[in-house]
Image (cartoon, rainbow, N blue to C red; front, side, top):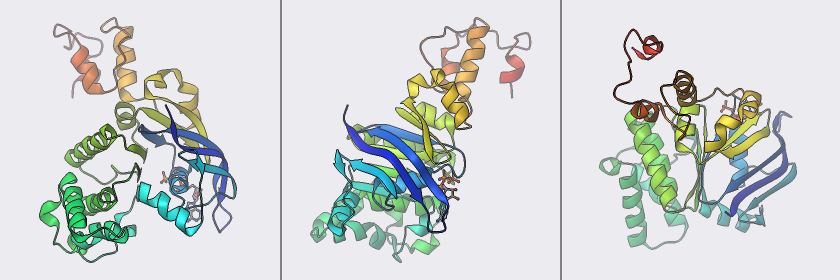
Length: 291
Ligand SMILES: Nc1ncnc2c1ncn2[C@@H]1O[C@H](COP(=O)(O)OP(=O)(O)OP(=O)(O)O)[C@@H](O)[C@H]1O
């Protein structure tokens, strides 16, 4: 499996002297679904901003598609056409007065003809269910709607990789589900999706690969399916075991479920329980499962 992004021993210091990354090494394979987790201030945003050249390492190297990042103007233009970034705060990303205008900004900048721009904007708005809002002023939108417009703006560039900084934060549950489905559709089209998150349960059920950060370093990268064997790295990044793993382990311990296959969501664990499982007051786990 080929590598899309590679950080080698990257150091980054903000202008005020604060350290953002320290000897950070991470490899992200092409067309994968990647979740980056770590405590506040562990460097997730700083890392994402290195993947499309928004930030430049003080030491170490960033490779995209096997080539060293080219920080000259033309080099950065090429990378940013291919690697789209959705910021955590939509107000940092949206700068046009109207939705259509904002989403069309990128494709127009690529020099595409008007019909192609219109088609790309329509597709992107459709993908985030914002078609009905195309003519609205951006400042009238809710937080979640603004976030969708940001995502549409990036999708309209048809990137090969999508970076999303805590994309689920501030979205309601139906929108989170829709966004996860959209990310899966992009993944099915071989787009590399990299997101940062504080939601271990979501990361465990959605991601192919999990990357853990602590104090500006990558302290563990592994396939999500190998998470139960990586408890040391989870502890180093102050991350809890996913609820599905804890519940599954408890049920295995009580002889109610086999240890295999791996179950990556609470829904999957509950669905795996035989209908005859006695989840009544008499059951040792009933009190924990009952509302
Ligand atoms: N603009 C900035 N100026 C100075 N220091 C910064 C700046 N942005 C981030 N930092 C510092 O860099 C370190 C890493 O921050 P970063 O935002 O990358 O972490 P994070 O893992 O994304 O955090 P969170 O989960 O809170 O979003 C922190 O110590 C932070 O205080």
